[in-house]
Length: 329
Image (cartoon, rainbow, N blue to C red; front, side, top):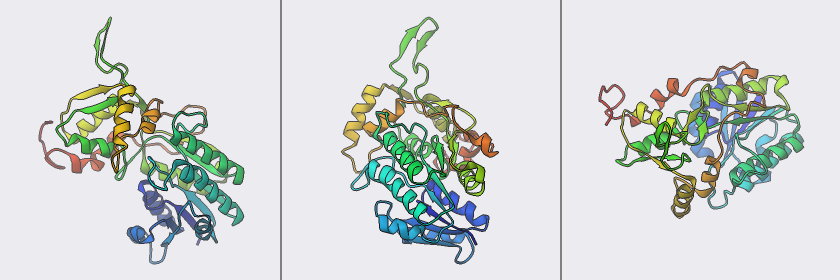
């Protein structure tokens, strides 16, 4: 049975990848910092098919142990904000290098590395720069690796739609970042301008399918893929979609990037900030497929629209419950 080591296999994308690999008959080794917290993955496969093991991507020796004997490796590890020893450079730059080095030394046949749309060594965002550093390290140590850059990933355990759905439960306005202040034009009052930053949300199950395809298809090796859903949304449209799916009404407040950065500054003093200054820098750039790299189409995958999947993901946040006919309020 083919053995695949999945770093970060207990996260939102990871659990989908582990489930897909198990269904296809792979032996799956889930490399995580706390194996006990990943035991919930074991019922996704047959007895003994899924094995959580301890590995910290910042610990080179533990990475080597997790890779030893594996036929393929998937690196999903990433952080959205820094805290303690979890720094962007250490996790997404040096950590990616450690995985690629260990995979090459162990004679692994294929490596799939997850990056992010917007990764660039010249980005003002430390997050995006660390993603670019990780890509460069992977290319240097494992040239035939498949690198995937998804847009904002949504699904049952995402940190995007669900975050705003939770905010919509509170009697407060929802922010629309980056659309500028209201202004008068020849066409009338533009409250949200162009709607703010643009996103191309991608379903987590489609990302998992892309990862498995890259493991199984030799023609994907050494290539870069940008993964986006079938539709592009402005930030304003994202907020409207969340309110529609949760059957709630909340006012939307335009928040220019300057004000958002101030909010991020003060939020960073909280144990788990909802917004950081670095995230504001990321929001200043559209998160959409560039059109210059390979996409889902090259993998033969038709991505699902957010409107199809979100009803089941956000039903717990819906006003009145899943089967309610309650009007928005």
